[in-house]
Length: 281
Image 1 (tube, rainbow, N blue to C red):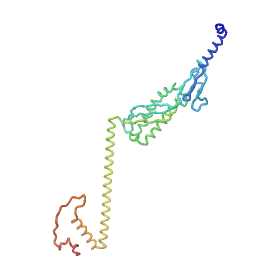
Image 2 (image 1 turned 45 degrees about the vertical axis):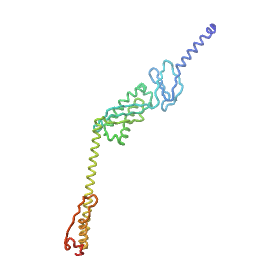
Image 3 (image 1 turned 180 degrees about the horizontal axis):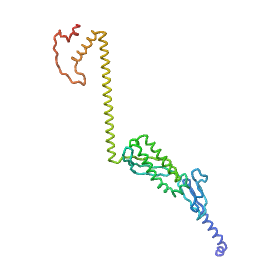
């Protein structure tokens, strides 16, 4: 055995060194990651990047000279929790929002931010600032309508423009919650209730005005018809007016009217008021 070791020792040592060197040279890039090979502080190669030629798999590097920076290829989240934002109507809003981004230029990301955490740290104050600017141009009620979508589109565009300098692309921005603090919330509810009551009063006033106009027009039309009828047949007009008077005087109370009670009207047969009953003109 000693003789075999003496005979093959050099070969074993060389093979061992080669095996260690091979293990240090090989690196694997999975589908969900990108890789940047850095040599003496400068990026020299990329693997499995968006639109790149080198796909996921097994690769070689120069041991102790090349280092591999791994970069997430999947979508990443950036959150903003309970930040106070002042709206255009001077309401203090508590906003929870998040953005989703991905690294599309890992070389730039390594040079500018160093890591995905560095990108998050750089984008967080930018998201905060852009949201404040955009929501500050709109009222609280506008953020409850379709205007919210326009605001978020502007936020995404502005955030994406600034994220490009870190090799990132912003694909989505969402507001998870927009609330008023407790005291302003109650004040807003009271103001909304007051606005609705004022609107209801305005509608009722408009309805009463329209009803008066319609009644006045109807009365005017009726008066015109009466006048025309009187001009065409004075006897019929006199008879019609007498019937109206009798109906109003002797009819029982209608539904919804106060009862007039039981009363008697005593008139002499030749009373002028009963002239139409006697068939006299």
